[in-house]
Image 1 (tube, rainbow, N blue to C red):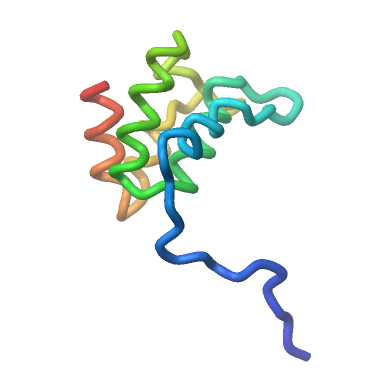
Image 2 (tube, rainbow, N blue to C red):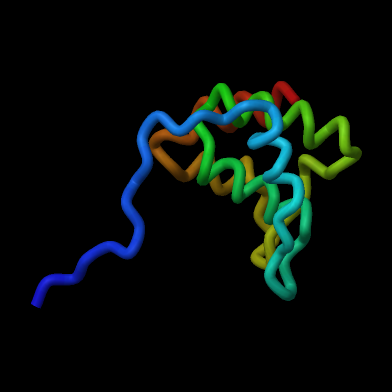
Length: 95
């Protein structure tokens, strides 16, 4: 039996400022910090250049870059565990 993905991966998707800012509107699941949820959503959905732009909008909106998840981890903690996360950790620290 073969399982088919329900969503195809989109390569080269355009993220203009309006699209990047739209990530500030996501609602968190119950029990998850809204600020952490937004950071994680952006981290998982954006390349590093778009993520840096998002961080500027995030800070401008007065959001908390040190927000934690239910396990007490910041996004820096999580990104540091991922092989591709180094640039994201640097961007978070710079912000």
